[in-house]
Amino acid sequence: MKHITKTLSAFALATLLLAACSKQHDVASPESPLLRDNSARLSVIIADGDSSDITGPGVVAGGKVYRNGNVYTVKNFKQAYSPGSGQPADGNFYWRFSENNAGTPATYEIKMTGVATGDITSADSLKFINKSFASVTAADWATATNPGTHPSGVPNIIGMDQVTGPAPGPVAAYANGKGWYIYHWIGHTVEPVSGRTLLLKSGTTIVKFQITSIYQNGITGGTFPYYNFIYQTF
Image 1 (cartoon, rainbow, N blue to C red):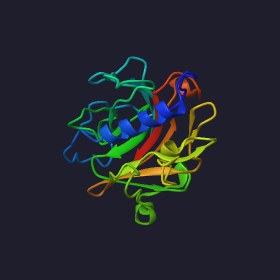
Image 2: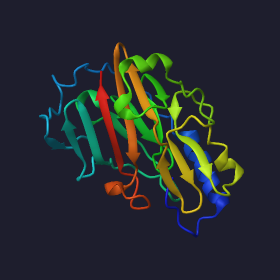
Image 3: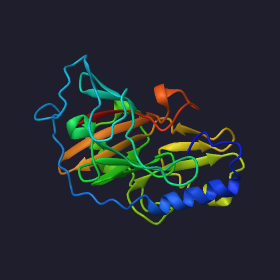
Image 4: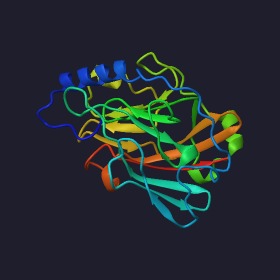
């Protein structure tokens, strides 16, 4: 979601949302075990205080991964895709925390999908917790909230938490109070839910991550989707 042209009617947008949600789960993925320390046998090993370009299939140049201690920051991650009909385009991005790099439909650990690539799905277990990223520990997995079944009828998706403004019913129906972003109908912008951290679990490995923006260079209302997020593996 985001900046939708003024010529796009509310009905057309609602139709796009429904169509995208109905097609966003067409790629299956096998389990992909994560590496606990995120430091060995990676496709991208980043020294503390350093950064690396994001590479991989379909990656659009300009994205980078930065490391500060055990925390990794991703800026301007984007993969090329064949957009669906209408605007905004829908598509899939794939990420592998265990490699600090982009993934594929067969190897992803999280997938960004749907209209404006705004929904998050995982190849394993996904939860969220209302705590700041810095304060979340591996132990929080036990009390974190499962997003349950998405309004589209598919489980294990984190998408729209709430919508503000006079959004049409079909759009508002996708706001389930268990998402990572707020959609502002007036202005058509996406804002991450403050203080909400996402958690991924694979085996005994837990990754906490937080989406900070889906706009290029983190400028709300700018070019989208360009994923910006932070993460840490336990």
